[in-house]
Image 1 (cartoon, helix red, strand yellow):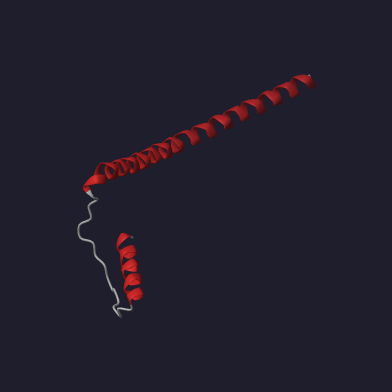
Image 2 (cartoon, helix red, strand yellow; image 1 turned 60 degrees about the horizontal axis):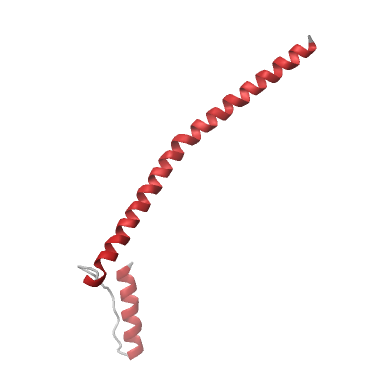
Length: 93
């Protein structure tokens, strides 16, 4: 995406100058942030990795707990229906 953004910006600037040049490709071979911001850049990368890890953990938890909760809800519902049937049967004597 960065290469496409750079290409579009370069083309816009050249068109503004009326240079008559068409930029057909931009290829960034080595992209490093400036030394002044390298620590912040690494912090952002680490935060993104943490975010992805936490999302994966949350999804794994949901994949495990939701079926358990549905099973428990079904068990409770069946127990309640059984109790209802028992009370009705006892009331009819």
